[in-house]
Picture 1 (cartoon, rainbow, N blue to C red):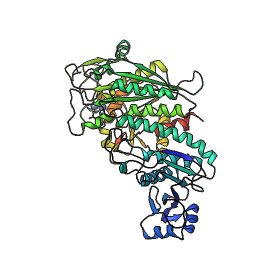
Picture 2: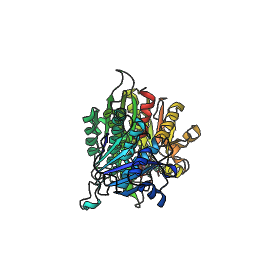
Picture 3: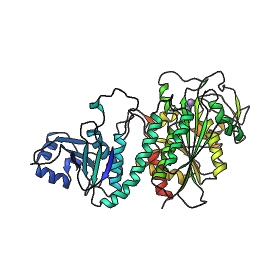
Picture 4: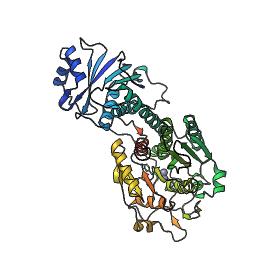
Length: 490
Ligand code: BES
Ligand code: MN
Ligand code: ZN
């Protein structure tokens, strides 16, 4: 589906806004007049309240050209970006498979350029589908909507804002496709190839294989992939849009393409969801694509650790002790606490090689974060208040919300081991997300750092938000794009 900023309405349906209590916008009022009051009559007769995301579809009222008039709610008189996203998303949801091909939305007097871009982004987020393996989808179930055109008070400015919005939508689609992909088709080598594809947008991509990693001493990461017949990889993405020689922003992602738990095998029920255990890495890949597509004026590097955690005759055992690249030794007490083992080496490598301004890692790291925060907030853990505050703000601005949880020496103590420098799980089940973060921090050398646990937000099949599809949400791309734009490009 394509978004177009244009004065000339497409042939098809026309969409006008309404506010709380079903009050029509100016564009709505003038169409209502031409239609002999059909719109206000429909509002009165039904339960449409004008909330953001609500829609009311009226088929071809006499006096108005086109197939349908759609009234979409935006809530308050000056809706914020999230309300506009929801409005765009609700509108697309209403017409996506209706048979309609084109739609024109009037945003005059409703949204400025930024707002129009958010509306378009919401429309794209709602249009997302993962249908590539559905060979028998009947024609009347396929999406029909091809174009959403938008008009505003200043289309030139809206056009410019939308070029950013489009890049974000593209990055989110990339992330969602990766998360939703079947794990038999997205093992580490195929994933590395998929990352290579974003070089098309100007990102420099480099791949490390197992031999490279052995030479670097990355036995923490390598141990996780040891039971898999697929070769572990690290993909490194560089976007150089900032000043020459300026320290890069650094994003690190957990890319466990499938997490069986290894020898500490997970229970069978719901294990299929562990195809999404690479959601952190998908967000990093999507973000790098977005930054490149919109030619962000920053230097950024993305690093993703790609492994498959399988049980096997050669798999890592509970009780094994491994040497991480940092030189620190790790006693593996649970092979299912594998994400931290992957990130330990990637974080260390990123720091050594790039000396970045900061590091932000994203990972579907712990089931415990679902117990704490559900699907509504990601958990953040950090040694830096400014980064944490700025991420919290970006979260509120994009509705990809984060909530900071504590770290500290009293938790860190829990991962001390009697036989190695540390063990890979805490004492008992309590504070599981925090002890995981403590583990990561042992591989961060006083660099400003934030860990984002997205086990709850990265995959979600039951959201009521029209912007979110089932399963892969693409969480993190919108959050971090905003975080970068607001703090490093001004
Ligand atoms: N990938 C899982 C975490 C996860 C759980 C993500 C549910 C999404 C939904 C991670 O590798 C894991 O297995 N963590 C263990 C850690 C434990 C063994 C200390 C967990 O959370 O149970
Ligand atoms: Mn695991
Ligand atoms: Zn995992």
